[in-house]
Image (cartoon, rainbow, N blue to C red; front, top):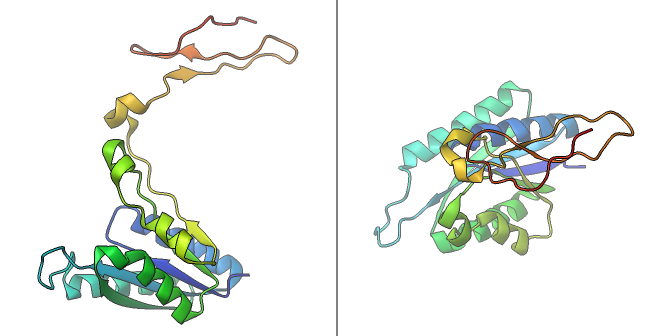
Length: 182
């Protein structure tokens, strides 16, 4: 199904999960993988990029080596572009490689970063007809994001018993309404 997969990686915490995801996908479909890192030029940086050429090359080489150790045919490239062309560059690399699918990592943005953050994933999806697969980002410790907790637990009910209802769990729960007892 996916003979050739393009995977775009960066140096975020989602990169190892993305590589693990693409390795499993490639092994399951006997796919070849093209690893690409788009080294973003800094706005007003006069040619400076987020990573040095050496750092970017090491990132791609490490990813390619890891895939090859798993028996996957892999090659890689580093491409430089501005923030405005990240998605277009990924799509163009996929077309040049004649990829069957594009795999991207995900970041779990919160708050204003989620609302106002530009999403390369959304732009890539709009610019291509290829399937775009998103590898999950690593989960963070929920203690750091107390405002995002659900704060409810569901207890099992015997078959034919009452409906399940959320029960407050711990202090600060915002779940309201009556508890339904079996």
